[in-house]
Amino acid sequence: MIQPPPHFRVVIDTAAVILGSARVSSVLSTAIVGVALCAFALRHTIGTAGLLAILVSLVVLVAASLAAQWGNIGWRALVPISLMAFTFWAWLTILWSQYQWASLAALSYLLIFTVLGIYIALVRDTIQIVRTFGDVMRFVLVVSVGLEILTGLVFDTSLRALSIAGNLGTTDPIQGLFGARNQLGIIAVIALITFATELRTQSLRRGYAIGSLVLAGAVLVLSQSPLAFGTALIVLAASVALYGLRRVPSGRRRYWQFVLIGFVASVAFISWLSRVSIVASFDASGDLAYRLRVWRQLWSLGETHRLEGWGWIGPWNSDLAPFTAFANFGGRVPDSAHNAYLDVWFQLGLVGFLIFVGLLGLAFVRSWLLASRRRSIVFAWPALVLLVLIVSAFGESSLLIEFGWLTFVVCCVKAARELSWRNALDSKPHPSV
Image (tube, rainbow, N blue to C red):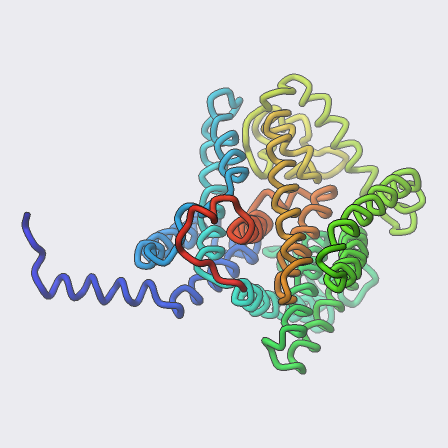
Protein backbone atom coordinates (compact mmCIF):
# COMPACT_ATOMS: atom_id res chain seq x y z
CA MET A 1 0.00 0.00 0.00
CA ILE A 2 1.38 3.37 -1.04
CA GLN A 3 1.86 5.70 1.91
CA PRO A 4 1.26 9.46 1.41
CA PRO A 5 4.29 11.74 1.77
CA PRO A 6 4.97 12.83 5.39
CA HIS A 7 4.31 16.49 4.65
CA PHE A 8 0.98 15.61 3.03
CA ARG A 9 0.01 13.64 6.11
CA VAL A 10 0.86 16.63 8.30
CA VAL A 11 -1.44 18.83 6.20
CA ILE A 12 -4.29 16.32 6.57
CA ASP A 13 -3.82 16.05 10.32
CA THR A 14 -3.66 19.82 10.70
CA ALA A 15 -6.83 20.26 8.64
CA ALA A 16 -8.60 17.61 10.72
CA VAL A 17 -7.63 19.36 13.96
CA ILE A 18 -8.87 22.72 12.65
CA LEU A 19 -12.13 21.40 11.18
CA GLY A 20 -12.84 19.37 14.29
CA SER A 21 -12.23 22.24 16.69
CA ALA A 22 -14.97 23.79 18.80
CA ARG A 23 -14.31 27.22 17.26
CA VAL A 24 -14.97 25.98 13.73
CA SER A 25 -18.12 24.17 14.89
CA SER A 26 -19.30 27.39 16.51
CA VAL A 27 -18.65 29.47 13.40
CA LEU A 28 -20.32 26.93 11.12
CA SER A 29 -23.35 26.67 13.41
CA THR A 30 -23.74 30.45 13.48
CA ALA A 31 -23.42 30.64 9.70
CA ILE A 32 -25.99 27.87 9.21
CA VAL A 33 -28.59 29.50 11.48
CA GLY A 34 -27.90 32.89 9.91
CA VAL A 35 -28.35 31.64 6.34
CA ALA A 36 -31.52 29.71 7.26
CA LEU A 37 -33.00 32.70 9.05
CA CYS A 38 -32.12 35.10 6.22
CA ALA A 39 -32.98 32.70 3.37
CA PHE A 40 -35.86 34.89 2.15
CA ALA A 41 -33.70 38.02 2.12
CA LEU A 42 -30.77 36.24 0.47
CA ARG A 43 -32.99 34.73 -2.24
CA HIS A 44 -34.38 38.17 -3.09
CA THR A 45 -30.99 39.89 -3.15
CA ILE A 46 -28.39 37.46 -4.52
CA GLY A 47 -30.86 35.10 -6.21
CA THR A 48 -31.65 31.41 -5.79
CA ALA A 49 -28.34 30.40 -7.38
CA GLY A 50 -26.39 32.48 -4.87
CA LEU A 51 -28.32 31.03 -1.93
CA LEU A 52 -27.77 27.49 -3.20
CA ALA A 53 -24.04 28.16 -3.62
CA ILE A 54 -23.83 29.25 0.03
CA LEU A 55 -25.80 26.22 1.22
CA VAL A 56 -23.74 23.74 -0.79
CA SER A 57 -20.54 25.30 0.56
CA LEU A 58 -21.88 24.92 4.09
CA VAL A 59 -22.75 21.26 3.45
CA VAL A 60 -19.20 20.57 2.22
CA LEU A 61 -17.68 22.26 5.28
CA VAL A 62 -20.12 20.45 7.58
CA ALA A 63 -19.21 17.08 6.04
CA ALA A 64 -15.51 17.79 6.55
CA SER A 65 -16.09 18.95 10.13
CA LEU A 66 -18.16 15.85 10.94
CA ALA A 67 -15.51 13.57 9.45
CA ALA A 68 -12.85 15.27 11.59
CA GLN A 69 -14.72 14.62 14.85
CA TRP A 70 -16.62 11.46 14.01
CA GLY A 71 -14.93 9.48 16.76
CA ASN A 72 -16.45 11.76 19.41
CA ILE A 73 -20.02 11.31 18.17
CA GLY A 74 -22.18 8.40 19.31
CA TRP A 75 -23.27 6.97 15.95
CA ARG A 76 -26.11 4.77 17.19
CA ALA A 77 -28.29 7.73 18.21
CA LEU A 78 -27.50 10.05 15.33
CA VAL A 79 -30.95 10.51 13.84
CA PRO A 80 -34.39 9.65 15.27
CA ILE A 81 -36.05 6.79 13.40
CA SER A 82 -39.21 8.89 13.04
CA LEU A 83 -37.25 11.59 11.21
CA MET A 84 -35.67 9.00 8.93
CA ALA A 85 -39.11 7.49 8.22
CA PHE A 86 -40.56 10.88 7.25
CA THR A 87 -37.61 11.71 5.02
CA PHE A 88 -37.72 8.27 3.38
CA TRP A 89 -41.44 8.55 2.58
CA ALA A 90 -40.98 12.06 1.19
CA TRP A 91 -38.26 10.80 -1.17
CA LEU A 92 -40.40 7.80 -2.10
CA THR A 93 -43.12 10.10 -3.45
CA ILE A 94 -40.85 10.92 -6.40
CA LEU A 95 -41.97 7.59 -7.88
CA TRP A 96 -45.56 8.82 -8.38
CA SER A 97 -45.08 12.59 -8.22
CA GLN A 98 -46.93 14.64 -10.84
CA TYR A 99 -43.84 16.91 -11.05
CA GLN A 100 -40.85 14.63 -10.53
CA TRP A 101 -38.07 17.10 -11.33
CA ALA A 102 -39.60 19.70 -9.04
CA SER A 103 -39.94 17.05 -6.31
CA LEU A 104 -36.31 16.04 -6.72
CA ALA A 105 -35.15 19.65 -6.41
CA ALA A 106 -37.41 20.34 -3.42
CA LEU A 107 -36.35 17.17 -1.60
CA SER A 108 -32.69 17.94 -2.20
CA TYR A 109 -33.29 21.39 -0.71
CA LEU A 110 -35.05 19.82 2.29
CA LEU A 111 -32.19 17.35 2.70
CA ILE A 112 -29.65 20.18 2.84
CA PHE A 113 -31.37 21.80 5.83
CA THR A 114 -31.88 18.38 7.42
CA VAL A 115 -28.15 17.66 7.26
CA LEU A 116 -27.26 21.12 8.53
CA GLY A 117 -29.71 20.79 11.43
CA ILE A 118 -28.35 17.37 12.38
CA TYR A 119 -24.82 18.79 12.39
CA ILE A 120 -25.73 21.55 14.85
CA ALA A 121 -27.50 19.08 17.15
CA LEU A 122 -24.53 16.70 17.13
CA VAL A 123 -21.61 19.05 17.67
CA ARG A 124 -23.11 21.72 19.98
CA ASP A 125 -24.44 21.52 23.51
CA THR A 126 -27.94 22.82 24.20
CA ILE A 127 -26.71 26.02 25.84
CA GLN A 128 -24.35 26.61 22.91
CA ILE A 129 -27.26 26.16 20.50
CA VAL A 130 -29.30 28.69 22.48
CA ARG A 131 -26.45 31.20 22.31
CA THR A 132 -26.04 30.62 18.58
CA PHE A 133 -29.73 31.22 17.90
CA GLY A 134 -29.70 34.20 20.24
CA ASP A 135 -26.75 35.92 18.56
CA VAL A 136 -28.21 35.45 15.07
CA MET A 137 -31.70 36.53 16.09
CA ARG A 138 -30.43 39.69 17.76
CA PHE A 139 -28.62 40.66 14.59
CA VAL A 140 -31.55 39.86 12.30
CA LEU A 141 -34.11 41.66 14.45
CA VAL A 142 -31.89 44.75 14.71
CA VAL A 143 -31.41 44.80 10.93
CA SER A 144 -35.16 44.29 10.40
CA VAL A 145 -36.05 47.19 12.69
CA GLY A 146 -33.31 49.33 11.13
CA LEU A 147 -34.65 48.77 7.61
CA GLU A 148 -38.20 49.45 8.78
CA ILE A 149 -37.04 52.74 10.33
CA LEU A 150 -35.24 53.75 7.14
CA THR A 151 -38.14 52.90 4.84
CA GLY A 152 -41.00 53.95 7.10
CA LEU A 153 -39.68 56.99 8.95
CA VAL A 154 -36.54 58.37 7.28
CA PHE A 155 -37.26 57.99 3.55
CA ASP A 156 -40.98 57.11 3.66
CA THR A 157 -40.70 54.54 0.88
CA SER A 158 -40.77 50.79 0.34
CA LEU A 159 -38.01 48.29 -0.31
CA ARG A 160 -39.48 45.99 -2.93
CA ALA A 161 -36.41 43.75 -3.13
CA LEU A 162 -37.12 42.56 0.43
CA SER A 163 -40.92 43.04 0.36
CA ILE A 164 -40.65 45.73 3.05
CA ALA A 165 -43.64 48.06 2.69
CA GLY A 166 -42.29 50.79 4.98
CA ASN A 167 -45.27 50.66 7.36
CA LEU A 168 -43.50 51.65 10.56
CA GLY A 169 -44.95 55.17 10.45
CA THR A 170 -48.48 53.86 9.88
CA THR A 171 -50.88 51.55 11.65
CA ASP A 172 -50.09 48.67 9.27
CA PRO A 173 -47.89 45.69 10.28
CA ILE A 174 -44.18 45.48 9.51
CA GLN A 175 -42.49 42.55 7.76
CA GLY A 176 -38.77 42.93 8.48
CA LEU A 177 -36.44 40.64 6.54
CA PHE A 178 -39.02 37.86 6.30
CA GLY A 179 -41.51 39.16 3.76
CA ALA A 180 -44.65 38.64 5.86
CA ARG A 181 -45.90 39.68 9.28
CA ASN A 182 -46.68 36.14 10.40
CA GLN A 183 -43.13 35.00 9.69
CA LEU A 184 -41.70 37.99 11.55
CA GLY A 185 -44.05 37.41 14.46
CA ILE A 186 -43.16 33.71 14.77
CA ILE A 187 -39.44 34.57 14.73
CA ALA A 188 -40.06 37.16 17.44
CA VAL A 189 -41.77 34.57 19.66
CA ILE A 190 -38.84 32.15 19.25
CA ALA A 191 -36.49 35.05 19.96
CA LEU A 192 -38.37 35.83 23.19
CA ILE A 193 -37.93 32.22 24.34
CA THR A 194 -34.25 32.28 23.39
CA PHE A 195 -33.48 35.61 25.07
CA ALA A 196 -35.39 34.60 28.21
CA THR A 197 -33.34 31.39 28.36
CA GLU A 198 -30.13 33.42 28.04
CA LEU A 199 -31.30 35.63 30.89
CA ARG A 200 -32.24 32.71 33.16
CA THR A 201 -29.02 30.79 32.49
CA GLN A 202 -26.92 33.96 32.90
CA SER A 203 -25.13 33.11 29.66
CA LEU A 204 -25.41 36.74 28.57
CA ARG A 205 -24.92 39.99 30.45
CA ARG A 206 -28.17 40.94 32.16
CA GLY A 207 -28.46 44.31 30.41
CA TYR A 208 -28.03 42.78 26.95
CA ALA A 209 -30.51 40.00 27.74
CA ILE A 210 -33.18 42.43 28.96
CA GLY A 211 -32.56 44.71 25.99
CA SER A 212 -32.93 41.72 23.67
CA LEU A 213 -36.26 40.80 25.29
CA VAL A 214 -37.53 44.36 24.82
CA LEU A 215 -36.45 44.27 21.16
CA ALA A 216 -38.20 40.94 20.49
CA GLY A 217 -41.33 42.10 22.31
CA ALA A 218 -41.46 45.32 20.30
CA VAL A 219 -41.05 43.42 17.03
CA LEU A 220 -43.84 41.02 18.03
CA VAL A 221 -46.19 43.93 18.71
CA LEU A 222 -45.25 45.76 15.50
CA SER A 223 -45.78 42.62 13.41
CA GLN A 224 -49.46 42.68 14.41
CA SER A 225 -49.59 38.96 13.68
CA PRO A 226 -52.68 37.27 15.18
CA LEU A 227 -51.00 33.89 14.71
CA ALA A 228 -47.90 35.02 16.62
CA PHE A 229 -49.98 36.62 19.40
CA GLY A 230 -51.99 33.43 19.88
CA THR A 231 -48.84 31.31 19.82
CA ALA A 232 -47.17 33.59 22.37
CA LEU A 233 -50.12 33.17 24.76
CA ILE A 234 -49.95 29.37 24.45
CA VAL A 235 -46.20 29.41 25.04
CA LEU A 236 -46.68 31.61 28.11
CA ALA A 237 -49.23 29.16 29.52
CA ALA A 238 -46.91 26.23 28.76
CA SER A 239 -44.04 28.03 30.50
CA VAL A 240 -46.13 28.46 33.63
CA ALA A 241 -47.15 24.78 33.52
CA LEU A 242 -43.55 23.72 33.02
CA TYR A 243 -42.43 25.94 35.90
CA GLY A 244 -44.94 24.18 38.14
CA LEU A 245 -44.03 20.68 36.97
CA ARG A 246 -40.34 21.24 37.61
CA ARG A 247 -41.17 21.90 41.28
CA VAL A 248 -43.34 18.83 41.77
CA PRO A 249 -41.56 15.88 43.48
CA SER A 250 -40.44 13.31 40.92
CA GLY A 251 -42.68 10.62 42.42
CA ARG A 252 -45.84 12.67 41.77
CA ARG A 253 -44.77 14.30 38.50
CA ARG A 254 -46.30 11.61 36.27
CA TYR A 255 -49.70 12.13 37.89
CA TRP A 256 -49.56 15.86 37.28
CA GLN A 257 -48.47 15.27 33.68
CA PHE A 258 -51.73 13.40 33.08
CA VAL A 259 -53.69 16.15 34.84
CA LEU A 260 -52.03 18.67 32.54
CA ILE A 261 -52.90 16.59 29.46
CA GLY A 262 -56.54 16.52 30.53
CA PHE A 263 -56.55 20.25 31.17
CA VAL A 264 -54.99 21.00 27.75
CA ALA A 265 -57.53 18.74 26.03
CA SER A 266 -60.38 20.56 27.79
CA VAL A 267 -59.03 23.98 26.86
CA ALA A 268 -58.55 22.87 23.26
CA PHE A 269 -62.15 21.63 23.10
CA ILE A 270 -63.54 24.85 24.59
CA SER A 271 -61.34 26.91 22.24
CA TRP A 272 -62.72 25.00 19.26
CA LEU A 273 -66.29 25.72 20.37
CA SER A 274 -65.39 29.40 20.83
CA ARG A 275 -63.28 29.68 17.68
CA VAL A 276 -65.44 32.38 16.07
CA SER A 277 -65.15 34.78 19.00
CA ILE A 278 -61.44 34.00 19.41
CA VAL A 279 -60.72 34.80 15.75
CA ALA A 280 -62.74 38.02 16.06
CA SER A 281 -60.82 39.06 19.18
CA PHE A 282 -57.54 38.82 17.26
CA ASP A 283 -59.04 40.70 14.29
CA ALA A 284 -58.05 37.79 12.03
CA SER A 285 -61.33 37.23 10.19
CA GLY A 286 -59.92 38.37 6.85
CA ASP A 287 -56.89 36.09 7.02
CA LEU A 288 -59.02 33.17 8.17
CA ALA A 289 -61.51 33.63 5.33
CA TYR A 290 -58.69 33.57 2.80
CA ARG A 291 -57.14 30.48 4.38
CA LEU A 292 -60.47 28.69 4.44
CA ARG A 293 -60.82 29.20 0.69
CA VAL A 294 -57.36 27.78 0.12
CA TRP A 295 -58.02 24.83 2.43
CA ARG A 296 -61.33 23.95 0.73
CA GLN A 297 -59.69 23.92 -2.68
CA LEU A 298 -56.77 21.95 -1.29
CA TRP A 299 -59.06 19.37 0.27
CA SER A 300 -60.95 18.94 -2.99
CA LEU A 301 -57.76 18.34 -4.99
CA GLY A 302 -56.20 16.19 -2.29
CA GLU A 303 -59.01 13.65 -2.49
CA THR A 304 -57.56 12.52 -5.84
CA HIS A 305 -54.41 11.16 -4.16
CA ARG A 306 -55.65 10.81 -0.61
CA LEU A 307 -53.37 7.97 0.51
CA GLU A 308 -50.05 8.68 -1.23
CA GLY A 309 -50.23 12.41 -1.98
CA TRP A 310 -49.34 14.38 -5.08
CA GLY A 311 -45.60 14.40 -4.37
CA TRP A 312 -43.31 16.65 -2.34
CA ILE A 313 -42.90 20.19 -3.63
CA GLY A 314 -42.16 22.30 -0.54
CA PRO A 315 -43.09 25.89 -1.41
CA TRP A 316 -45.77 25.80 -4.11
CA ASN A 317 -45.03 26.47 -7.75
CA SER A 318 -48.04 28.13 -9.37
CA ASP A 319 -46.79 27.10 -12.83
CA LEU A 320 -47.23 23.39 -12.04
CA ALA A 321 -50.45 21.41 -11.81
CA PRO A 322 -52.33 21.08 -9.50
CA PHE A 323 -51.07 24.36 -7.99
CA THR A 324 -52.25 26.23 -11.08
CA ALA A 325 -55.73 25.93 -9.57
CA PHE A 326 -54.64 28.42 -6.89
CA ALA A 327 -53.26 31.05 -9.31
CA ASN A 328 -54.43 34.53 -8.29
CA PHE A 329 -56.57 32.92 -5.62
CA GLY A 330 -58.58 35.69 -4.02
CA GLY A 331 -56.22 38.33 -5.43
CA ARG A 332 -53.20 36.51 -3.95
CA VAL A 333 -51.07 33.63 -5.20
CA PRO A 334 -50.45 31.30 -2.23
CA ASP A 335 -46.98 29.77 -1.99
CA SER A 336 -48.17 27.20 0.55
CA ALA A 337 -51.31 25.81 2.14
CA HIS A 338 -50.82 28.17 5.11
CA ASN A 339 -51.10 25.04 7.23
CA ALA A 340 -48.19 22.62 7.53
CA TYR A 341 -50.41 19.67 8.38
CA LEU A 342 -52.65 20.10 5.34
CA ASP A 343 -49.56 20.77 3.22
CA VAL A 344 -48.04 17.45 4.29
CA TRP A 345 -51.33 15.62 3.71
CA PHE A 346 -51.67 17.12 0.25
CA GLN A 347 -48.08 16.41 -0.79
CA LEU A 348 -47.39 13.14 1.06
CA GLY A 349 -50.88 11.73 1.51
CA LEU A 350 -52.40 10.15 4.59
CA VAL A 351 -49.33 7.94 5.11
CA GLY A 352 -46.99 10.92 5.16
CA PHE A 353 -49.38 12.89 7.36
CA LEU A 354 -49.49 10.15 10.01
CA ILE A 355 -45.69 9.83 9.99
CA PHE A 356 -45.38 13.61 10.27
CA VAL A 357 -47.78 13.86 13.22
CA GLY A 358 -45.94 11.00 14.92
CA LEU A 359 -42.62 12.74 14.30
CA LEU A 360 -43.85 16.00 15.82
CA GLY A 361 -45.54 14.28 18.73
CA LEU A 362 -42.55 12.12 19.61
CA ALA A 363 -40.13 15.05 19.38
CA PHE A 364 -42.33 17.25 21.58
CA VAL A 365 -42.99 14.56 24.20
CA ARG A 366 -39.27 13.83 24.48
CA SER A 367 -38.35 17.49 24.80
CA TRP A 368 -41.17 18.16 27.28
CA LEU A 369 -40.10 15.25 29.50
CA LEU A 370 -36.53 16.50 29.42
CA ALA A 371 -37.66 20.01 30.29
CA SER A 372 -39.72 18.79 33.26
CA ARG A 373 -37.11 16.34 34.59
CA ARG A 374 -33.73 18.00 34.08
CA ARG A 375 -32.50 20.55 36.56
CA SER A 376 -31.04 23.02 34.07
CA ILE A 377 -33.54 25.55 32.70
CA VAL A 378 -31.85 25.34 29.30
CA PHE A 379 -33.76 22.12 28.57
CA ALA A 380 -36.99 24.14 28.42
CA TRP A 381 -35.77 25.86 25.24
CA PRO A 382 -36.26 22.93 22.81
CA ALA A 383 -39.69 22.11 24.27
CA LEU A 384 -41.00 25.67 24.02
CA VAL A 385 -39.50 26.27 20.58
CA LEU A 386 -41.06 23.04 19.33
CA LEU A 387 -44.38 24.22 20.76
CA VAL A 388 -44.08 27.44 18.74
CA LEU A 389 -43.41 25.47 15.56
CA ILE A 390 -46.25 23.00 16.19
CA VAL A 391 -48.85 25.66 17.04
CA SER A 392 -47.86 28.10 14.28
CA ALA A 393 -48.04 25.23 11.79
CA PHE A 394 -51.84 25.49 11.99
CA GLY A 395 -51.66 28.90 10.28
CA GLU A 396 -48.43 28.76 8.25
CA SER A 397 -46.32 26.12 6.50
CA SER A 398 -42.98 27.66 7.46
CA LEU A 399 -42.21 24.62 9.63
CA LEU A 400 -41.54 22.64 6.45
CA ILE A 401 -38.86 24.85 4.91
CA GLU A 402 -35.57 26.56 5.70
CA PHE A 403 -35.36 28.06 9.22
CA GLY A 404 -38.50 26.32 10.47
CA TRP A 405 -37.35 22.89 9.35
CA LEU A 406 -33.75 23.47 10.47
CA THR A 407 -34.92 24.50 13.95
CA PHE A 408 -37.25 21.53 14.18
CA VAL A 409 -34.48 19.10 13.19
CA VAL A 410 -32.12 20.61 15.78
CA CYS A 411 -34.68 20.24 18.58
CA CYS A 412 -35.84 16.81 17.39
CA VAL A 413 -32.35 15.31 17.18
CA LYS A 414 -31.24 16.94 20.43
CA ALA A 415 -34.21 15.46 22.30
CA ALA A 416 -33.65 12.05 20.72
CA ARG A 417 -29.99 12.10 21.76
CA GLU A 418 -31.06 12.55 25.37
CA LEU A 419 -34.09 10.21 25.41
CA SER A 420 -33.54 7.33 23.02
CA TRP A 421 -33.52 3.58 23.58
CA ARG A 422 -30.41 3.45 21.37
CA ASN A 423 -28.43 5.32 24.03
CA ALA A 424 -28.23 2.08 25.96
CA LEU A 425 -26.20 0.62 23.08
CA ASP A 426 -23.88 3.59 22.83
CA SER A 427 -20.70 3.62 24.89
CA LYS A 428 -20.10 7.31 24.26
CA PRO A 429 -21.46 9.61 26.97
CA HIS A 430 -23.65 12.45 25.74
CA PRO A 431 -23.37 16.01 26.98
CA SER A 432 -25.96 17.02 29.56
CA VAL A 433 -26.55 20.50 28.23
